[in-house]
Length: 112
Image (cartoon, rainbow, N blue to C red; front, side, top):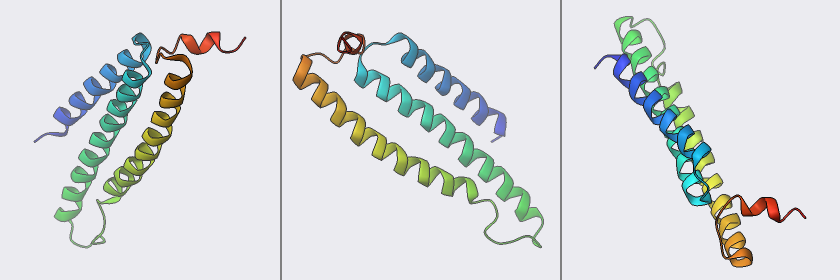
């Protein structure tokens, strides 16, 4: 499959994520949209990794591990995303316990 399909899909996912972050007020939806954006980046990393791996297979003189760097980055992004979700959800649960709302506009009122 051509790399253009992966790029178009990733751009669409990233735009959906940005739209969700900028327009929604629910903190849980915002976190889900951030995860969609991270998955769009992961899709591009894996697609480019596959593309470069196929290029290296055409030239067998290159190193054997070439082309998997993008997949390693995806693994680390997934670990960071899991940590972000756990901390973010803990913050949302504490915010809900204190304010009985997950509306991010309500956080501005907590400054005073």
